[in-house]
Length: 253
Image (cartoon, rainbow, N blue to C red):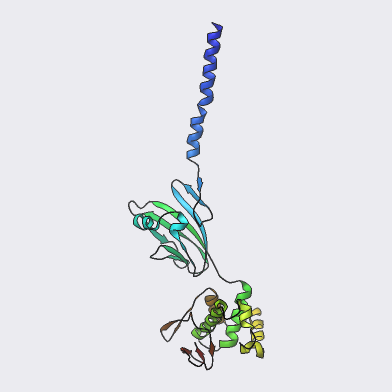
């Protein structure tokens, strides 16, 4: 009789021990899960909404399908994708995300079928330049085109950045500007004076604006209501043989 009682007690203990496993499994299913997504830092999925954090520089892009780990055709077929702040980042027809200016925004994907949120991409847009580059570019633009219109200031900055990217010139902003025999303000001391004005907070604001635009990769100028892509321009002066564009006192090619 005792052996039967012991057997029943042992069986009961085994049942009690095993039961909590099913409860534990249920509670885990309600927790946020971390999933790996191509080209993204991390992505979390809570209540079936995927959230991805992504950094991008001004005038640079990234693929939203790649960031979310979904095929492009499927994304375009099933979801609407919009930016909460198009002044910071926009979504192109090819569903790539482009950084517009420094700041943060969220790209949201919603179902075309029922409007439910499928995913969010938290986008942090960063500038392409640091304080030192902004100071130097602002000063050289002021020294070269301080008295000219904004388009003329910007055109000077574009040419300088084109040289930075060209294999025919030194590969840094500082080396391009201080390359021997290239820029008059370096030789005559006006660049040094412009740098001092910048440090004192007295430099022309439009020169700083033009510097920010060109350092961030803007290569288009608008002059007399005509837009010109200056991506291939490498020279400017008061007179340039074979000039392709003239803005006030400067010719460019």
